[in-house]
Amino acid sequence: MTPPTLGPDRNMLDPTSIEGCMTSFTIGIIVSSSRPTRIGPKVAQWISELAPYGNEVDIIDLAEVDLPFLAEPELPSAGNYTQPTTVAWSERVRQYDGLIVALPEYNAGYPAVVKNAIDTLHAEWNGLPIGVVGYGWGAAAGSVKQFGEVLDRVQAVRLDGPGLKFGEDLTPEGEILQAAPEDAVRGLFDQINAAARETAAA
Image (tube, rainbow, N blue to C red; front, side, top):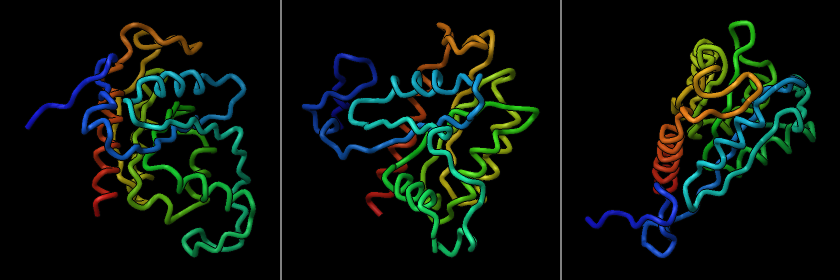
């Protein structure tokens, strides 16, 4: 089998090759904190810049999505959404072939806004590839573990990404350092694309 043709950037396929002409997948990158002092947008932007050729990338800032907390009169599993915010969120999630969540850790847990974003919907998560990149002290390991259990419960395809540690991979102000695991993030995109291809072929 002939190996894929690489473009000018490493790990990126040449669009003139067969592999480069494959179906383009759209991947959303979620900023999962709404705190005024958050660095999530910087982390999400860094992740987006590592996407391979052919992926369309969209940054989803939950502070801008601004979902009310569990406002639907029926359980999300019923799928009978009545709130415009829920309908809009459902439509937005359905346009993605996969997601990456940039996840911090606050008081040994993950932010409430991202739990609400998950709990507001139901069927939309089933079978959707979702990668997680934790960041913070200890790379948000506790938060990532807890959030992974949530993804398993909603039957998403959970894909574990790398973690970013303060002082090693980034600063508390969100400056990405040279040691940050770029190749591991590229590998996470590869996993999401592979899972999306399986779904598309099913």
